[in-house]
Amino acid sequence: METKTILITGAGSGFGKGAALGMAKNGHNIIATVHVSSQVTPLREEVAALGLSDKIRVERLDLTDQYDIKQALKWDFDILWNNAGMV
Image (tube, rainbow, N blue to C red; front, side):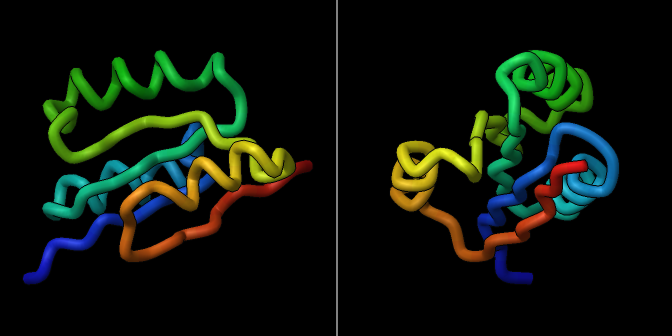
């Protein structure tokens, strides 16, 4: 299996979080992004507790902020999984 780096938006909870953890467990490198800063530390702690720190990088990414988008475009990833949504 070829390892891919997958950027997942909306990975702070729900489907995005489950996908990030599951794909990391299957050997992929994940950039798990969350919308608000307060979600970063809990997700990083969970990733560490699961022993996935070498597979998952957690970043804050606000898709409504042009600066954040420009920064994210500099990250090295193969696949974008846009899971972000606002209620």
